[in-house]
Amino acid sequence: MKHIQTLETEKLQNTVKKGGCGECQTSCQSACKTSCTVGNQSCEQKK
Amino acid sequence: MIHTFENNGYRLCLDENSGSVHLLDDISFEVLRRLEAGESVSAIQEELAGRWPEKELEEVLAECDELQKAGTLFTEETYRPAVEAFAARPSVVKAMCLHIAHDCNLACRYCFAEEGEYHGRRALMSVETGRAALDFLIRNSGNRRNLEVDFFGGEPTMNWEVVKELTAYGREQEKSHDKHFRFTLTTNGVLLNDEIMEFCNREMDNVVLSFDGRREVNDRMRPFRGGKESSYDRIIPKFQKFAESRNQEKYYVRGTFTRYNLDFAADVLHMADLGFRQISVEPVVAPPAEDYAIREEDLPYICEQYDILAKEMEKRNREGHGFNFFHFMIDLSGGPCVYKRLSGCGAGGEYLAVTPWGDLYPCHQFVGMEEFCLGNVKEGIQKEEICRSFRGVNVYSRPECEKCFARFFCSGGCMANAYHASGSIDGVYKIGCVMQRKRVECALMLHAAKKLSTDENRAEQDGRD
Image 1 (tube, helix red, strand yellow):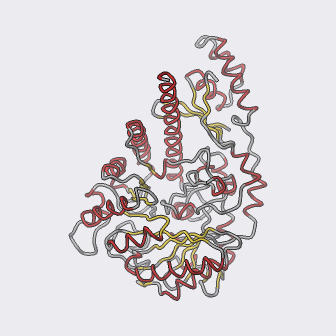
Image 2: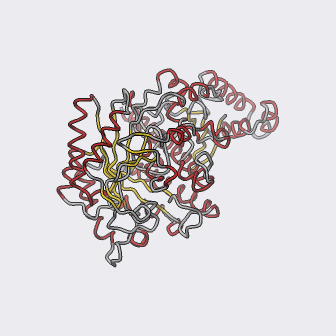
Image 3: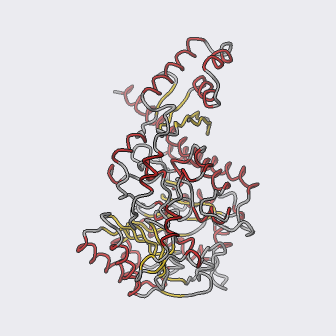
């Protein structure tokens, strides 16, 4: 496209069917312990 | 819904419901900004007619159509029923914060544990209580295989033998129950020595090393008990050695910024200049009356600090000496599913904190507030209604979140923050929301910058070939 470049992203709607396994890390256990950033967690199924 | 914004010269559009991120040129930014504001296509065409060639305007509108068809622009929100059903499912416990020691050799002024003592009750966890906690976790984890245990405090190295024994016990148990423990240690570094480092490098998936950045900033809020010695001087060489021994991976130096160092970008950069590559610095959680608590009037300055930091990180990335800042890290292609993103942090459900004497709390931030005590590791959860109230909190339970572009990244925020700010775990900590939104924008900008730099490198490479 000439005007709009899309960054490589996984579409969230694609995660509805396969998601919810719960094997991923609890957000607060990583390095924040307060501010609940989940966007930076990785999906265990994609590792 | 879309969110268009500018950061560090980059013009971006986040398609909120698909999570897609688009890098815009000037004209597409103008168009999408207006579409976001609810203007009609014909109004936009009329408004921009004199300023841009008609052909270009048509090109942009055609690109928008194409992206919408591909499900990456103006994507509809369709997750609510699935996420609410997910939130209502029987919960399992998969993560535990073990308060190994309610005692500390530092007396950090902002400590929610009241300088490590948690409301006046100093105590060390016994091996028996710790084992009972791990048994409780295994028993309540259903078919989840990966279980997380954070050795936390106070300062857990003040009860180091118990940490070692519990790690060994966990390793023994994981075999017979087909589980995998991921252990973490959070430490202030005062007692850190070679033996502890070697043990952690063998057994701990992650270590969190607490300090706040510049020497004067750190020592002001993180003093020794009654002593005059600088805690910074004592711990930094050990933290540097520790980080190197872990190959600069699987650790975080973690700091807190308060009203006393609103210029925290300098602290993050100081940490990077000390050689640390995994950095997390975040705003203090505090009752609003505290002198060090962040106030609403501080927000413009804080947001500017995030911008300064992001800009400097972009520069360092380009120069090849970048570092990770936890709150700017967003995994766009391998990130969590929509359930995880919308159902909150897990406190009071899949995540619990355990006191030295075995009481269960929704999370470490609530430990010591008796009204939130859920039960204990031997008898299990006694107050299911409290757990239910925590599990019921998610993005859809807060009207403010529904309108926020960052909801898929923050998951509704920290319930302890919400409780301090509004008196309810279901409330909103507005100051935190402003900071979170700014962090998401900075994070997306860094992704865009990386993409452009990769594209440029590729073009350069192609030119040479």
